[in-house]
Image (cartoon, rainbow, N blue to C red; front, side):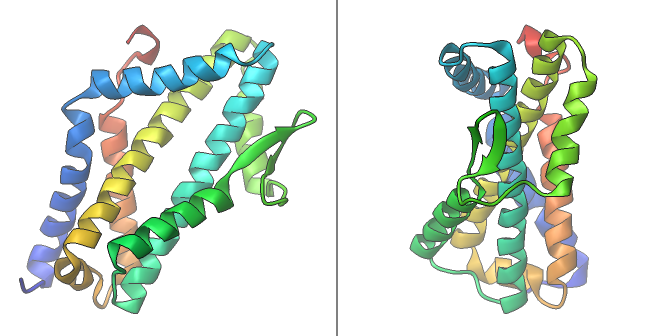
Length: 202
């Protein structure tokens, strides 16, 4: 299929829509799945503060992971070549490992030994403005769910790129940065659309 400026945007939009459709069509299932993860985390934590710190660590992980996922997409576009599926799986595993966080002595750090940067610290610090611990946990739940859904969408985009290499390489040709940004914007928009208005009641 020939990719040109007149059909590129339509194809990008269609790709991201297809990546988000499984979640849009089964919101309750995805919410229940994510809440089961959160419930399991809380059951293994003694205090609300420790649980909140763990949620912050998970959110930093998901944010860092998504940035790395976009960097990889951009690099593929810039190189003009999408790797084979097994190589993509290796890349996903590597960036997941590089993004993993943990809580040590009450502090959030990356498992690879690196400390959080200023942007990460400022991001998680804003939750502390919510004095009520239940309210703080609710805000963290909402962000966790949004970031988790956005990651699911992005992994579905990876699958599309892997299965449609010729189309994918055409989408990035001459504009890898702009195409990557468009994918990121659309994935974020669809993640918003997948959110319930009141997540705690779902």
